[in-house]
Image (cartoon, rainbow over all chains, first blue to last red; front, side, top):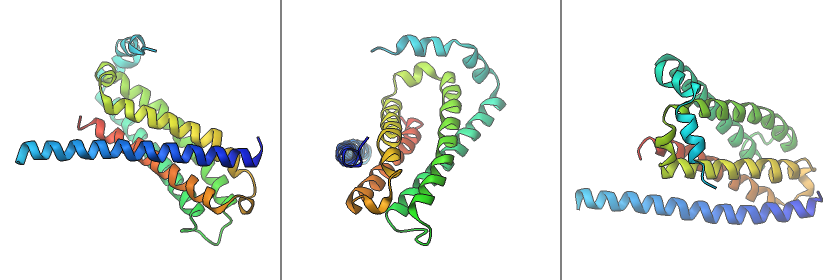
Length: 41
Length: 158
């Protein structure tokens, strides 16, 4: 495959992956905070 | 696609009989799994931190990437084989565990990223690739493999 195409694919993959990972961990951390609030007020 | 039949089969397979009956065997395989994770994590960090120009600046990044990729492959095979064995002990429990599926999703994304994008692109001369692309590849790679490892650890708490 051509380098330019791979570069575009890499950037596209990177954006989608980083946004998804950011969303995933924010949900997990939110869940932990919610649990701690339920336990300790 | 429902994978329940596969997990149901795995739960009653010979592999499951061994993993459930012999704690010593399970412990050794778990040790190999952790060894594989540490090796994979090490290779990812060395390669990606080199791409970010943080470590091993005196060695060409092409050389670092080439050498770390070989051991990355070995680590990945170790992790997958030992992981299948370990999951056979609690196959149905894992099927209903959200974090297990998060780990599998990120693992799939990581494998696709490495073999379909990162590896083919980094075979070219790194000086000919835009620096922003190299940095994005490194940050994405570290983030994906961190998610694989962390969500795997999270299975134990969920």
